[in-house]
Length: 240
Image (cartoon, rainbow, N blue to C red; front, side, top):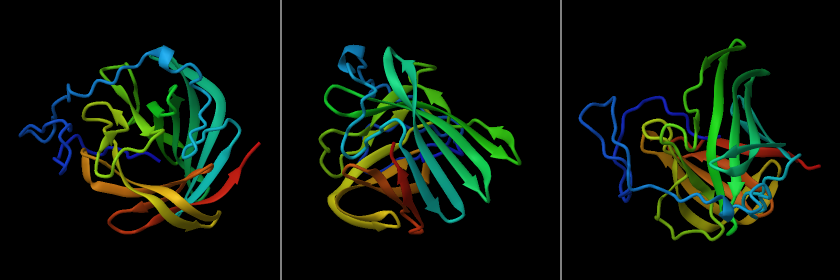
């Protein structure tokens, strides 16, 4: 469900002062040395208990989404992975088209003592006819300069205040900003009110932009392409 970078080219985005500057060479970009989140394992005392109301990640829960021909299954596993001294929950995100797997990703999340949900990286594989054809977009915080980011705040920042959800220079630079805190959303799985709407994008792909809707006690219920309006909707949730 994260953006997959198809180009190493950079582009400036309005209102964002922290984005890495671009060089004249489209195949290179400059590392943003101003982004340096402090990760202290002591600040993640119960890191695998992810109970943020807008992004609960409870092991055993499975979410199913439908977007066009794609069926996306997000499974919150009981597995963990330790990154930078923090124990992360492993979430498996599988995309299928016509019953065939086209992408299989393991994401790593942890919640800090304040209730913020952090994203520590992903191991992603793209498939064609059952064969892995790409691992582009994979990264792990602490490896090769990659740094984690916050994917869901405990207290939402002001609108138009972009924040990094991840940072692996020139490879994974997803960002988000709050649009609204009181959206009404209807998807096949149900109707919701007072939902968080974010605008999520990456400076590495200026044309890749979408809106996401997160609702209390459920999490992500809808993705909407900012340009086309194409929707990826929550169709089912299975809780243990």
